[in-house]
Amino acid sequence: MDVRWEEAGWERLTGRSGRRRLPVWDCTVGLVVGDESVLLVDPGSCLREGAVLRGEAERLTGRRVTHIAFTHGHFDHVLGAAAFAGAEVYGAVGLDSLLSVGREALRLSAVHHGMAQEEAARAVELLVLPRHPVSGELTLELGGVQVLLANVGPGHTGHDLAVFVPGEREVVFCGDLVEESGEPQAGRDAVPARWPAALDRLLSLGGEDALYVPGHGAVVGADFVRAQRATLAARFGVSEA
Ligand SMILES: [Zn+2]
Image (cartoon, rainbow, N blue to C red):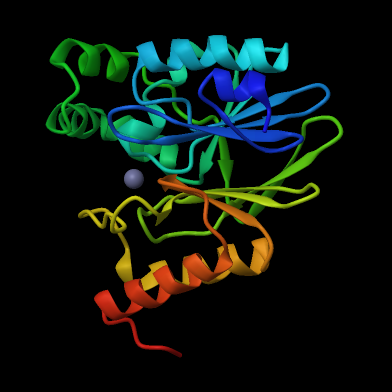
């Protein structure tokens, strides 16, 4: 346990990584600390939250956030990005154009989920599009740690990106491909038939001993991800090859 991180509301996962569960929508954000660069996995659900996270990340790491990875394009995972001026933003290939044409849908979704009208409008107005598309896998050198961004979807959405952090224990930021605090949310943009295969890719990259960090809920192990895979396959009637 790291008192400084815990006091700030963060859960330290390994020597180089931690995560925080945000209030209201219980969305997880992750932090990976390199010797030169700092990666934030999802930047908070609105500008106010993004600004708070930026302050916390700077206090905890002594550096500014240089890289942001969007695990997918849902409002609670992307709308805080404008608080991180100058950060390089990564997303699954195609997410930039989806967000670009889908601003109004994003705003409506945020309001539908309880965000104040003005706050949602402002966040969408300042929406940051990912400039770095990831198809397949991409390695980010943060200094002393290389992080793997993997386009493991589609599944929860058409553009799901997972983040693998090596270390004394591997950490996998799963986005909403995995949820612990409730049933995985499958909206109209989900691709149920491909979701189990996305979880297979998560498991093959992370292995048995990794810490799997869901988009919502407590950190889980490979067994939980496997069980969720089976539940999803049954729920969506995906036949096993
Ligand atoms: Zn989602």
